[in-house]
Length: 417
Ligand code: FES
Ligand SMILES: [Fe+2]
Image (cartoon, rainbow, N blue to C red; front, side, top):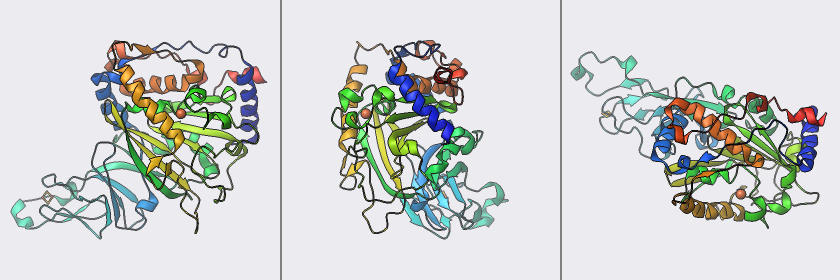
């Protein structure tokens, strides 16, 4: 982040603390229809469009460090085989044999010189090409060149491996847009995978995620954990293209910024990390399901995955600089995944209560404040990705946040100059 951007953020923090109303020209946000959390039609639209067309974090290079290493990834509901090829490329395929559709691998991870189907032995290389079949003479003129494994889009951001089921999606870098440049200081190409855990949560995945997309709830839900280390009135939200968002909220002077999570003080730091991430909570929402407060000590995304309309899976990851002989840092859990840290328990336990409530006859919709506008921005983009005309009118959100509010545009900047 350059000097000018840092200076602007500092001024915007004061602007936010002193304003007595939302910024001039900021739209009133119409209620989010309640059915977006409970209507099976909307859940199906999410499946068909959002999960099918977005870049999704699937793995880290440390999980498949050498040629021949593979990982079976089914978190997004499709069976995907991610393979480290001899060339060094990371490939992804449907875990589906081109013969009769058997699974190529049935273990979560391993290492193999060739990918051999367990059913009748068809053999593929790490680039998915069909190399050999048993008794080829019995197939007539089988064209090997069109019987390879069906590829899934797979691209890296540094050491992180992302998957996209849409052959026509933009590249991962284009999808991240200006955030890719902003993230250079965090050196994602150097980070190691320190921890990855998964927890079942009994609420709709968006309810769980939205608790991490605004700071309006912090004083009530996190009075002892987050509230003392985050100045919520100085929070600055930024809307990025493609539904992504960022919050930057300073910590009060002297606050123990890592006090609410499980990160030791004496671990290595990412030296290039700038002033804002060192003194503020600088957290990103990457559409559709990633939330990460990035700091000099850890890059710890939380990922939210639907497992049904009213249940989800919370994945907690910690990426960090090499920890040497010290214990692996694990920001979000205690005892290596035994339980979530207190701050996440506060959110997830309350999410279960919210779910009961939104399923009741009494729930209609959600009025969002300016402070919660990143949630609205997410929903606006979700509708565009689904295709507004595909959504029943009573489940749509109005497109009220105009491009003039999308980074690098920001009408607030005119008020601070
Ligand atoms: S289904 Fe894979 S070899 Fe037959
Ligand atoms: Fe929270």
